[in-house]
Image 1 (cartoon, rainbow, N blue to C red):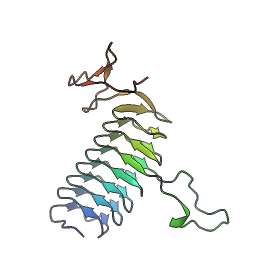
Image 2: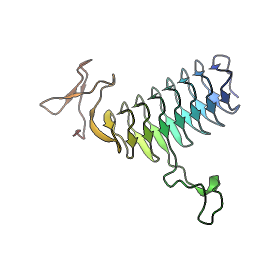
Image 3: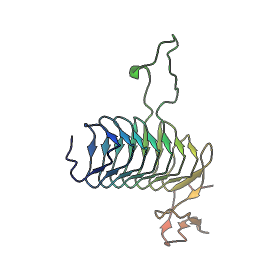
Image 4: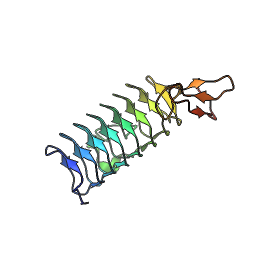
Length: 197
């Protein structure tokens, strides 16, 4: 167990002894954090968050109430996870094997998920296995992510489709006549190799 003197863990939270937690992190009511998970510095895990064994969470991450992060998920620094978001890990889920026996850990393969630096996952979004969400991308509320999301992409719907790009400040970018993009809020300029629809 790491030093938890500068960590806030609510008395109702269940945090495995083998979890590493960085200083300044808060874990709120009824969270469950399983074995060998790693949580970085200055993170906030809201009420009822579930962090499965081995999940990796970097620094300055905010995970809102009721989010579910299953084994195989890696969250990079500066990520926002909205309430009720779900990160799955099995593309072929079954409770039993073809012979009717109950599946064990050895009977399925993890489909990893990476949420890259500065990205945001909206409330109630679902991210399927074998997905990378790019840096500063924004997944809209209720979206179902079935394929990789490029950096700065704005995706919505089921299945999630790209409808544009967003700035580091999260504002939707405006396409310019020369093909570049600009932010209406902070005037940041962007050029992307693959232009949005």
